[in-house]
Length: 590
Image (cartoon, rainbow, N blue to C red):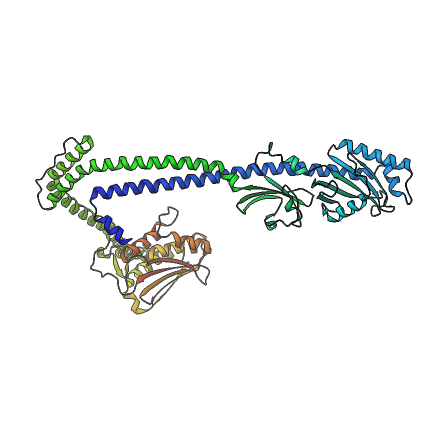
């Protein structure tokens, strides 16, 4: 790989551009092709899944209605008087009654044209009344019914049995049979007999006729136990469904075995209808479209590369002239000019721009120098003008002496504290001051606040003597103290509170803390403040944010403010500064 990059870097500029354009067109085309293919397949899959779900819902409803119809027919026979008389017989039935029962069966078969035969069996006498469209009343029918019943599956809650086999018709002609018990209407638990309803052919195959289906589904009927009850592929009958664990809930879909499976629960019946669509059937049309798209894209890539190569060859001649001109300028020839003939309006503008640039270079350099000097002066003046309360400070001193001379100690104390506050704000123009001076500033501020609100703010300073010489940015603590008073202690409610200001060295950092005993904040609020303190947020305090940003600008990332809860229930904000790397008081700071 390194050899290839080294070889590429050794090529001329025009060859590099040709290679780059070729790679860019090829990669872009492959990306477009990949995205198009993925999108096409995804859309086809989603659409196919939706259509398959609609089809499965229709089939499940139809199948459920059909089974319910046969089941209701079986239950209706219990209410027929001739059938009840037949089932109560303890000896052989009279021919007249047996014929009446057969007529009842015949009437029910006329309602459902798909019934192949019906038989009502008396469990006491093992005698049965049979009626069918084909002659199946032969010796051994009783044995066939017993075998088929035992091989069937429990179809719903109760003891209704369904089977799907070729036992009755032979010649691998499969049919579905429903077995429903017949009870005494006066004694529900008293079993009198059973009705056997044989339905011609496979109900699924008739309902899922692919000539009318929206999707080419391979449909199978799966019992809740996992056994495949019915399927187009007869070799699957009686085997276990391989993906039974995927059949969750009333309906859904999943992808397994290179196929899309769609399933639906058949209401109260213990079966799932499962439809399978092989990926080949799903993607057949999409793959044809993608193949055609590939051919078109390949042709477009070839045409694009050819056109790009011609354009590069033409453009490089112009660029080469400009490069040569820049080389001469870099060698000190400020009088050099370029001429680009027969190159078009755009390159003509390049020529004019280059020549104009050379004409104005000296003037521009001088202007830049002047503007830089002017910008530095403006910046210096802006820093000097940020805080100029000289007049206010002198005025407050006058008010202080007049109040003292009149004996108004409270006014004198407040005015003196306010004067000290503004005097400390000046700090002789310095941005970095000792912690001792900042603490004096805070003491003046707290004096004013206690005079205003009736001495409701208690303060404590836990600062070792050696920490007072720590150099910190001016006006670092005052916004934090103000925040603690107005948002933590809430002096508007005349709530008494306590502020604790501490300072200590932790490793290579100095940590100053401001703690309040106020109402506190939730963990979520504190996490939100810490996460966004370096970002602009008009809903967050400007003063606190300004303190954090000033520390970051002076000392770098990793220093600044950090909020946390304290044991008193309030909030503690820690200011982290470098312990031994502060700038000295004589340096200039932004």
